[in-house]
Length: 395
Image (cartoon, rainbow, N blue to C red; front, side, top):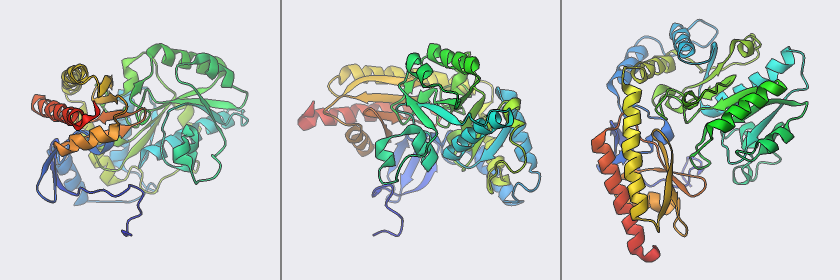
């Protein structure tokens, strides 16, 4: 057995360098990276502004811990608050940590405000909030929970877009409602704005906190800095990670002041969260994301890619049955008996990297910096991938 635990199967490709939207393997072959580390490499590979920020910081200070003030952490928090609903930010290292912290914050808020009985969270079917035991229990995917004992208590699941079921699930013990504005692992399913508004109204009516999981949708992925900014709905707490630092490990919990003030000294912590290296790269990433016209360009690229994929869906209607998503978070719905894995493998054979998701969906999560050349190349590769499945006699 390989010395690395086989939790990721048996990868057959090894990459040695990246440049922009491209990866190069150890044999010199070039791939167009429309996986982007699963929506992480938001500015592509080796972006010069991020490289310069990391190199400069690495020469000065790597790590000190949160026992001391970290100026770039304060700067990043202030910038995020200026750009969002939040009044305070806690930095961690990953999406699942951000969501665990968000749940802790929701429970703590009610306890401090005289309602310690409020500790349960309502989540949605087909959701995904991370791989820790608690976050697996929040999603209750049997495949992910297999072999790990009984799910952690405290989470109640309801169907998507069913307000009757959600309201029926609210009890005196309910503290929060947790949702992804677009379900990523669950199949690139955007939640309807009317539904999000009803969730906000229900939370306000019953004194609950609304928690958004924007781990995958945040930091420009949908063409706005955060996906919920396409709507008039704001959460009380939000978990972020993935694209926040363009590939450097980083996560964040954004919260209103009312929530943040209950998270007093000792209630939460992280050894590495918000350290100088992470904050240097996160601030550099935010520099680029907030440049004039950057997110407009993401929306334009999204429209071009969506249009091309819609055309492919019509051309190969025995392989694809539609396209959905938002911004550069796009899912191709694969038609049975074909599988998303088979289509993804065919795309890789033609030099295009993608990511599978639930409901037999194949994801495209390219760097936000892509342009017409990369989009045309991706569409050509996907055209050839679909054709190969048809020519194999399955469509």
